[in-house]
Image 1: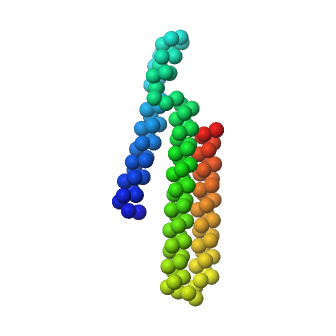
Image 2: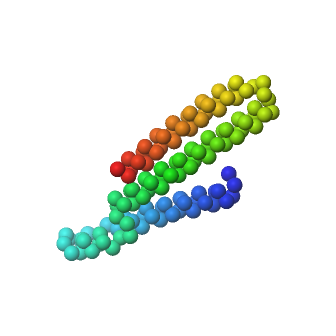
Image 3: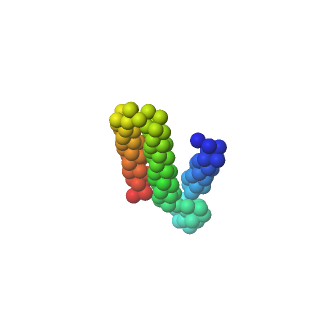
Length: 118
C-alpha cells in the first residue's frame, strides 16, 4: 500500500468517525416538550441519517477493498504465470479459490452494511 493510499484511507476513517459522533446529541436529563425537540433539531445529522450514511460509506469502502484485493491477486497470478508457464494450472486454481474467498467476505460485509441502511 502506498503512502498516498494509506493517507486517504486514514482520512476516510477520520471523516467517518467525526460524522458518526457529530450526529449524536449528548444525553441530557430534560423534560419532554419544547426543550427536547430543540435538542433533537440542533444536531447536524439524525441518528437514522447517520446509520444510513455509515452503511453507505461502509459498503463503498468494502467494495473498493475487495476490488483492490482481487486485482492484486490477478496481477500476481499473471506475473507468476509469466515467470513459470508450466505452473499455470496450479496458479490459476489458487487464484480462483482466493478470489472467491475475498468475494464471499466482501458480499457478506456489504450485506451487513446494507442492513444498517435499512
